[in-house]
Length: 77
Image (tube, rainbow, N blue to C red; front, side, top):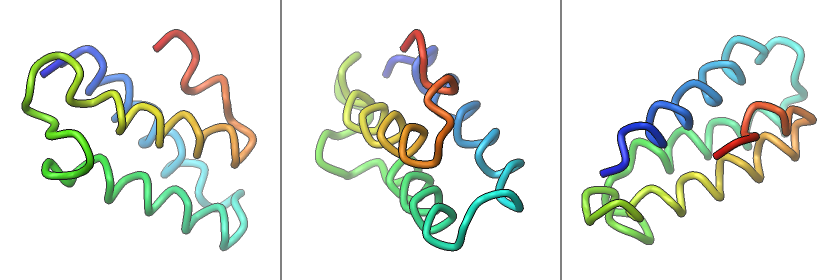
């Protein structure tokens, strides 16, 4: 597992949680979905299989960050 990527995803999701009061209901639903996907280890790519296990989680989180107007949270990873 790529622990650095896991920390980056978690940090971005935490920032979205902190900003939840400024998000619409639909945006909060997107954030909740990204969080659920991140904590689910048996998703499309098993999170514990090698260094690429979190790539799908990163794609989901990047998409949600962009969708809620916070793409900067996912820059650099």
